[in-house]
Image (cartoon, rainbow, N blue to C red; front, side):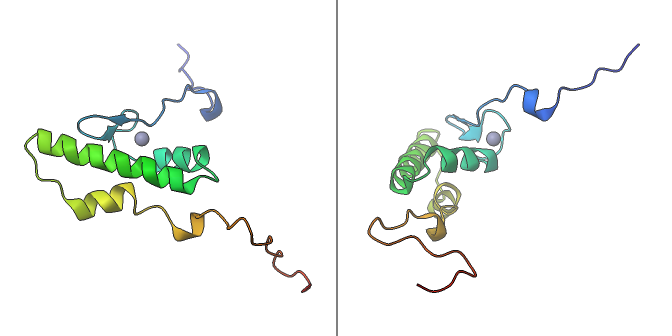
Length: 110
Ligand SMILES: [Zn+2]
């Protein structure tokens, strides 16, 4: 009897890494949301719109706090902030629109 071979990763149906409320665990991988794949998806979906991404994550964090209170828990604000917003890096901020693009490393000065 042949052993079934899993399809290549690129052909596997992908489940979106969405939050499952009220636990705020990922529906796909069960990690605390936003899990690493969700962060990648969000960074891609909101590329060039980091302020909108920060607002979305702030609203999600607020919903997670509300859900924790609703369940009778006591949310850890610092942990929630680190989880929802701590991964947003200053390096990922959108470049100012009035600044000219940087020269690549090794380029001659203008
Ligand atoms: Zn996930």
